[in-house]
Image (cartoon, rainbow, N blue to C red; front, top):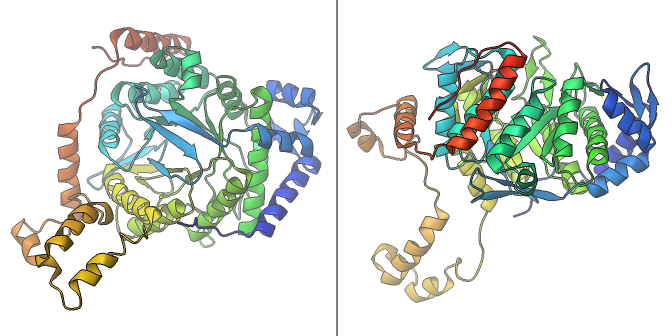
Length: 486
């Protein structure tokens, strides 16, 4: 089916050309000496005192030519892979939650909460990528980025989306990925994870994020370059201006990535926001946020670069009708637009809180979104022309053998089956089954999935080696952590 698009060709050309002008004449600030040296050697104008860089158009266009149009992500065993590009959509839970909602109780997440979360994600068919979704409060913050990945490596097979909080975190995290993958070269050939690297609006790059971008690019680890313009605060108060700023910030990161390693895989990512005029709070479930996202996705498709977005994040504080409303329209429209990776299921409170209950519900929304993307298969067979001709008007299809055979073939392909979380029974049947509300059915489904979870543990030698990485980091930063043993 035709991909959803909101920008015209002339709109995209204008935004891109003005982004080039902005980087050439206004520039960006880069708080990272190695990145400044890389840009200086490539011919960009670098003002060392202010750390301001002016990037010429030819550097940007060369970077766009070099970046891959698609790449693959593989699971732990290299048995299954996702092709990231074109208009195929994959979903990953929202990331880095500082709060955890369970049974209407909001608290700081613990390691045991994150392990349970990982196990559930592993069992959800429409959540294709594992995320480092919670920040456990019982782990020293200086080690939290590494420890989250460490847990995912132990409890999951699916590909991974992650990110770093520390200047030295990315190197350790890539090392752990390489250990599981049997070396850096094998990791480059069969990427296991992508990293999120966020620019700081407006037009700045921190030393932590730039270090992560450079380290990932060196090792051919896919990176989502992730601008975060907030309409009305860190971006001017129009959707169009936010898209322009978004694209320009992305291009500045893309140039550095491709100068470090031409052909390094990159996603045009984003997590825009919008200011709430009455309260000043940051909105992520607002329609304007979706418009910015769909706009930069149109630019990504025009450039031929894979796209990534934070969608399905609700501003609601609990799993309620608002959460369902905001998640539904964002996840469905994002998939119809062909965004390649959608990051956000399970998230509440404007990306502060993660919820297993919402994740289960969002998994159903993702399933519906993918069914809508699949669209309608139109052929002489699916139009059932021969059956209509042979049965005639007034036929009782349920009693016709030919029609029944046709239905047996096509209904499993055509009619989406949802999980027991959603009710599709009549009222009388629903009452006979106990009349349980959706919240009760979701809790039962969570328990069922936890009971059916099963995964081969990491080989002892690999577990020992990634334990060594974590022990080295804990000694370096004088912070204690609990390691997994077999």
